[in-house]
Image (cartoon, rainbow, N blue to C red; front, side, top):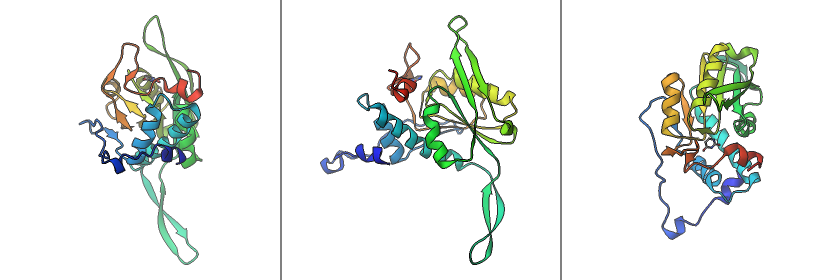
Length: 234
Ligand code: URA
């Protein structure tokens, strides 16, 4: 967690330390992960002076923490193991896992999650906005055959208009997925409303809910274009 150390400030010594106030929601299907390490990563990611290498590292680190929160809801089954001393009962995950990044920015959260779940299968969904219809169009979709029985985690750093996420969830459902969670880094009210108006049962796990979307579809204050910042294409 080296990047988080970089974000340590002297606020405490100057009596400025306080609990950060972050937007929450009354939607029971939305979890805002209120954790100091998440907040510290988010500070790095939001800052426009953060270089690509540090942005990548912070996005990977915060993704592990968000996945940790999401996985608390996963089902387990009893499993017998033999320790060096005795046979005992333990628990293992009940289902195979499938991580599905929405291209391209979702890839930025994948490596961190794979560190926690190296055996997860990976699907990919690419969605773009059709400039004529202004509707989301799928240009790529490749999902593992285990999708129907799996715990599926759809990932995209920014839940902005919500159109890509809606389209991706629809594709997952069409492919047979029944247990889907959506993990993002920053959401905003229009994106949350859009996703839950189409797919109200999907749990959403996010590090923050920012107040608004601007006319270009960017979350404000947000962190800018997550894909550009992660891939260094800004
Ligand atoms: N996508 C981004 O990368 N950033 C936003 O603020 C909105 C969508």
